[in-house]
Length: 231
Image 1: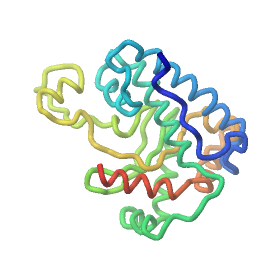
Image 2: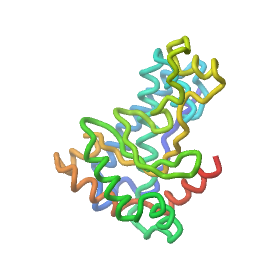
Image 3: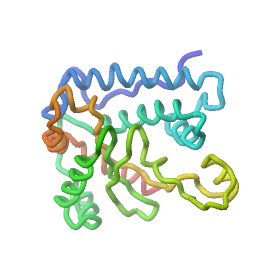
């Protein structure tokens, strides 16, 4: 049987990189080597199990509820994160729409302050992690970090009551008929993994973060916000 999960097509040519942010060599590593490894791992780990046939998102969500599936959760989460990150990059950047700028400004005070907050969060990460712009169920935007391979939609348990018996989030969900995680919908993500910035920047994370803003596809961000608002 063919592998269920396949590599996504990039919105730009990998051989061109995304200047001035990531070189062709960095894109080649992240997409054609690292991502291939992660997708292959997910296919191998899910073959013949209850996870086989699930979307990558659903695989992340379900495996993150079960401590015995930590390896699958890590591989699926990082595969989802990297693809989400790369899909919002472009070599033909257009300015954010007036509505997008207005929405972000309403949540952060100004578009520039949003970028300042995002940068500060990214540079505060110690070790490997991710910085995200996320939307909650009420449509409010915020910036958050996750660590290692964690996705924002599995980052925060929705119930921490001590009287719930059980060791998994799924147990809590069944006991209270609640979502196991706080519903946070990402619309933009930045990898702060060393594998993303070391090849092109060494330890100069500030330049890496600064250059990120030159290649963000704001149309994709806008589309994600509209889609997230309908979920």
